[in-house]
Length: 167
Image 1 (tube, rainbow, N blue to C red):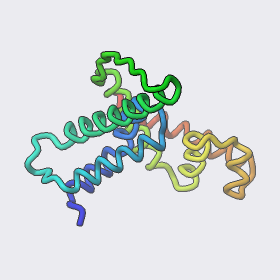
Image 2 (cartoon, rainbow, N blue to C red):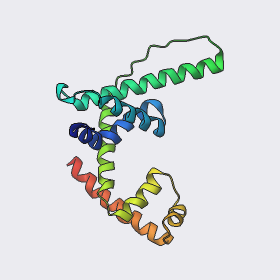
Image 3 (tube, helix red, strand yellow):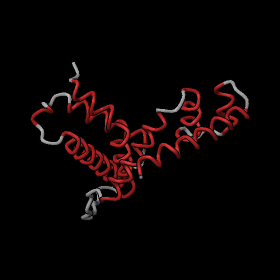
Image 4 (cartoon, rainbow, N blue to C red):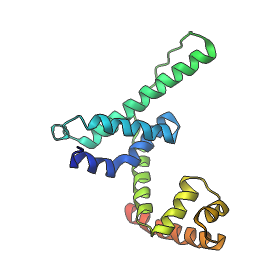
């Protein structure tokens, strides 16, 4: 049984946590898998005993992504160069800009979720799944003009919603 606090944490921070992981591993699907695994591990933790569950979540995601990246890079290096290893010391702390970018992206995803259903589907297909306008029209069974109208209205609406976050 998933605790209410974990479910709330998941709903509020999954996308931005996945963005943080994606910045490290450079793969959206791998990043989402990493974040899901972190939440599975967090289900075994009493979140009420943690001072800041949000900070703890991001620290866990960052560490899991770094573990993945290190393991993946090491394996790739060994594939290319045999068993020779070269170790570089790199500071992997997230900068203030990375955190702010993750927060902006999180707010954008929230704004997209507030769009009307059909507009939301169009934006997700085109902006998140890299569909062309024609492919999105075909997928949704609507005209190209309808897709263009949805995108125009969605972008206009998203600009207004995002402006509220920054002023």
